Image (cartoon, rainbow, N blue to C red; front, side, top):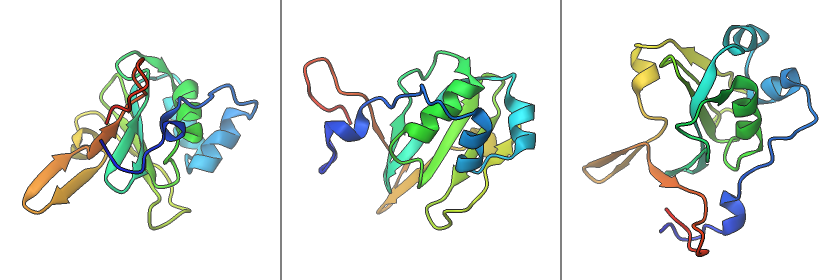
Length: 147
């Protein structure tokens, strides 16, 4: 368990935003060209950087959702200001790291490229590397926080 996490930080965000997708995309640093290119793809995973060493995994990971839905989840999820990733069913990935540059633009990695297969976050503690960092999940049904 990670100290300092509260259930409010891992509650599922509301993806029912009235904002147009173009506004959500602009907020996340995604270009109009990327939106046009990716709108037909379905996302199978997304995460945001909740803390420097932890990611918040989308509750729908493993179940394909629309690009629109994935973008709205990222925009409303805790940690998207630090960084986020959306992985698509074809193996490609859209990602943005804003930890040091809040105006950074998203980058697209095509399927099969090294960038598409690397973990969203790499944590090095001593001589141990934890690919993907620590993962924060939704609260369990008994109220315990899973980390």
